[in-house]
Image (cartoon, rainbow, N blue to C red; front, side, top):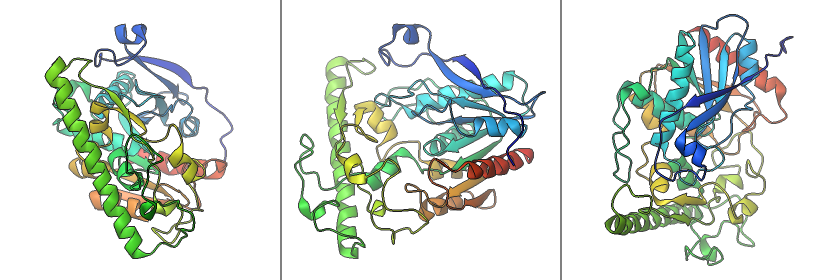
Amino acid sequence: MEPALKPIPQLVAIDVKAGAKLESQSGLQMLRPRIWGALSEPAGRARVAAIVMHPASNFMGHYLIEPLAARGVACLGLNSRYAGNDTLLLMERVIQDLGAGVGFLRQRGHAKVLLIGNSGGAALSSFYAAQSQALTAHAFVHGDPTHLVPDDLPPVDGLALCAAHEGRSRLLARWIDPAVTDESDPLATDPELDLYAPGRTAPFDATFLARFRQAQQARLARIEAWVDQRLARLRERHGPGSPAADQVFAVHRTHADPRCLDLTLDANDRSVGSVWGDPQTVNASAYAMGRVSSLTAFLSQWSSRSAADGPANLARCSHPALLLTYTADQSTFPSTRDAWLAAAPGRIRNVDVRRGNHYLAGQPQLVQLVADEIAAFAETL
């Protein structure tokens, strides 16, 4: 039932530690780095406060903020310093931003803090949870020190994972288009590996899928090897830690998951297509997931060596977890659910949100259902 009172979120500004030099074009942001959020609180002091955060998306308008506050759980929709632009995003810096949000809620007197990991926020929340219990991220993947200390990562009490991706590195591994034959020219492709080639129809045969998957892995390995080589050359010339010891580059055609077209693969309640519309158009677009990145950001977010793998980090921590599987999602699947459940046997519970799409767009009743489940889970913490 829709609550009668609708809490009004308040704007929150939280100071954070400075990151790399020139990580922003805003001099103000570099001189006084801040992150921003929208906080909704129930009347009186809430025992449990939640943070919903994504590495790069703006979650200040997240659909759970007000419904959770109406159920007695304070909720902060928090943005990282990379909101709206993940070109230079370092996952190790994002957990530092998330830690600033956790500390903010602790200072407000909330007894328990719950991390809500929605979509790409799930792997972020799991990475944070693992590092908050045992800090190992002393260096970025590219080798420079993170300067993270335990006080940057105050403890949390539980995780609620909604439409939960396993992590950016796993996404790119399943989405990258293996047909590309020239990284500088997205029109140069091998038609034998082109998911969108004229005449290719679903369901896809096993032989094609095996070749497709192998070619995806090979393309990613080539890109990662080039990143390592280029980064080594720049660091040799400019020195480690220099803003000049990095560069941006494009990875074309990053949205070619056969599951977008073949509903027999990892079958759920979804319809054909992508969460962003026609997958072929998204694949060829000027900007899409993982399209533009710096060398260091690629290693931290998208590479096989990223430390931000969701299930792996969930397995490393000991927090209780709630998994909410949206069964009509076009980007998380039964295999995704199974990977999360296998990571935390005995301390994770799954709830299927029937017919839920990735954003619960146009599904207000399902938003209320999810809020009910999370609020009930919060009461157990």
